[in-house]
Image (tube, rainbow, N blue to C red):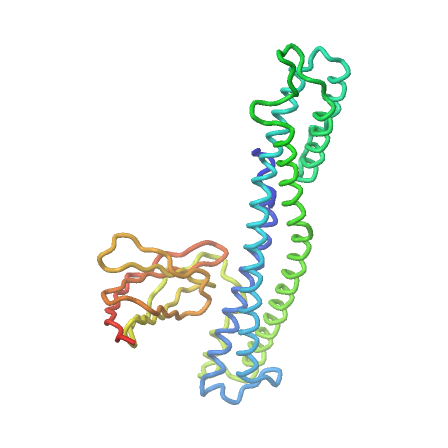
Length: 327
């Protein structure tokens, strides 16, 4: 069912991806703002009368709101996927049943008239449901198949009317399960977009007020200038792992950076393994911790991501991890 399978239109996907990308950028802005305002040179700097605690609160709220929205989006896509599977099955059954009906009852004018009136140009799941329901109604009214001995009710291979009605019931249930999902998601996405805009406007105010208060060449101005105002127009440059340590047995701490990145993907392998495996995606902090690791040499690579794509991976960082003490 190629023309129907892409129920979630690419344009809608791009819109959601752009929203999450903008949120990731605003999270990066707040992270840089928080880091700058934590520096001694900006200890007395209070943009809009706000302090470091306020910025930390904005960051926490935006990150948690985004995480909730990602979870809702994934759940909706799972529901859509389940609907598409059942929808495809119902559509294909309708096509097969219609073709077989026309062939079997080709000499029965009354039956053929009813068969030809079955709707066929279904383009949505609900239209397919109507098509299937009408098909089932016609099916139930058909006489036994002509030219068969002994006479028998109409059937398509192993597909009986009872089984076909089960397909209809499954499609109806999936449609009802998705009812209102799109509108609910749009409301939640609108709330995230509004929060992202508000936080971005605050960051712009931070930079404007900081540039007004701290002259070029001062340490304070240098920290203000680390806060980005516009998303990058190019893919991230190569990531660099700036710190890779095991502060305690069973734990690895990484710090990394990549110019133009709004989030990071982290991959891991043991030194004896061949392939790296992704262990974290969409990481917006520039540090990350792994816990509960077995002893041995653990290797990591990192690459930055933004709306333009993924950047080159970092060099491999190898971290010896000691055996954890028994509890």
